[in-house]
Amino acid sequence: MDVAKQLYAIEEINAIFENKGFDFTFEQLLESNDDDINWWINLSYDWKIIIVYNHHRNSTTSISKINNFDSIITTINSCKKIKLKNFLAECKLMTIFHCSCYETYFIQDLKPIYYLVNLERLYCQGLQVINEQSISSLKNLTFIDFRGSNLDSLEMLAEIKGLEDLYIQRTEIKSLKGIENLTFLKKINFSNTYVDSIEYLKNATKLEYLSCFQTYVYDLEPLRNLQELKTIFLYSTRINNLDVFQQFKTLIALT
Image 1: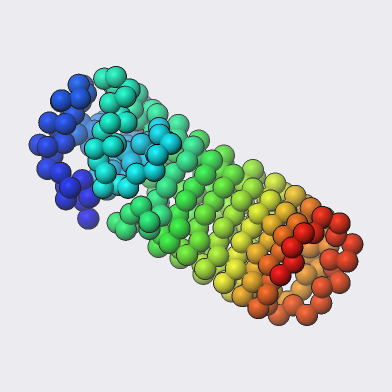
Image 2: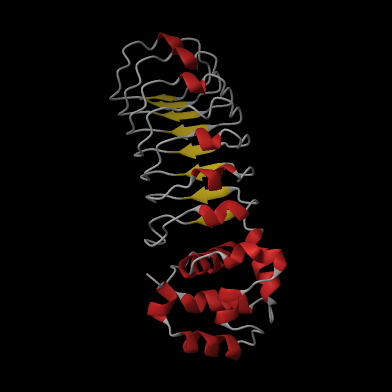
């Protein structure tokens, strides 16, 4: 589904570009082949729209919907005759990226974010296409939200050493394998999944928040050394022994 085509004809978009003083057309934005931005060539039309949308979100404090193309134009215009190459360079420097089902229903592959190596926060709620190789290259990520997606493995996160927040509730996950060496992890939510063991969390000594309700978890022993835990949700699990928490001094909420 080509969102921009539905909302505006190409001629209308180019008229807006010309009126705003841009030095490039929308077709050029779609077909750029500069050597420094080769990654752009392989993007689908829909992904180019999503890139423009996220550039807008990274450039303003307001949150606009993707169908508000006028606000995107206004933001781009604030850059004063922005050069196409500079525009795409700014896109590659984005630190926050939204591609959840709440922004778009037409993303078919996450591969394009492979090049956005500066991303720190990634929102993919409800997305039904998770490309593992793409995500594994994003070494600067500290926050990932995959809730409600079709994610079924965490092994692609193994090299994202600085990850602090991970939201994977309501996914197809059956194991936490892949995050055993993510020692900076502070928050994790894997509620409403098929996970039955928290063994892979035993090294997460900075963990402060754990939500694993409505899972198959039955043993809390791996948490014994996680003395920074403050909040834990574990109702509707197979756990029947809470002795491991007797010496926890920081625990605030246990549900």
